[in-house]
Length: 269
Image (cartoon, rainbow, N blue to C red; front, top):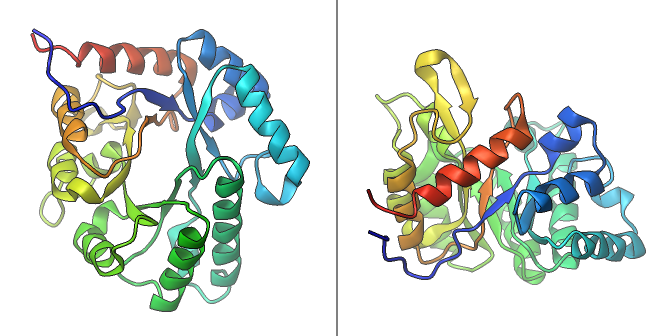
């Protein structure tokens, strides 16, 4: 029997970076291969060579959009996962902040897509948080902040700001890896807790029993069906769901497995 959904976008947008790095493909080849697998959206990485904001002139940004169009895929969003400690270390904070601002500006030029970042929410200077939100808000871009180990602090910050420019990101593999005595370790429960604050959700899996921090979706501890239903119930999320292929030995094969598993979870058994 088919599960009734609420009309949210539950299509998948694979991350391109692992394909480029592990298969030594160009971005164009990666896009074409993903399109051939039936994907209609992708997630780009603002730290990837050829995508970095400082490497892209106005014309190059238009060319990138044209490349996406020729491959028949749309851009779901940008990743910018710098080391979180760089946002609090005096020798790195200015550069990290500038890189984040540049990524926000690039996201605006590429269709005002959301930017997924990791922040040490509980310890970062309030002035830096305010500057990032102001930049995003001024450009019509949403920051999807990953702070899975600091959910309460993240929820409080989002509530205080109360702007579409700030939301939460959710990575299920990260949640599964947290220590149960101090953190929420169920991705489905985390999605429910974030509720309307969840801006961008990722799909990935982890099997810590076998020592795999990342594994193809469906081969680990993630309750794929429960997670899918939870994401469908969130009201603030901007689709598609990001299929995170990082840390996997064969990302293209993992993409196909993830797509099949995710689509199969659309039906109750």
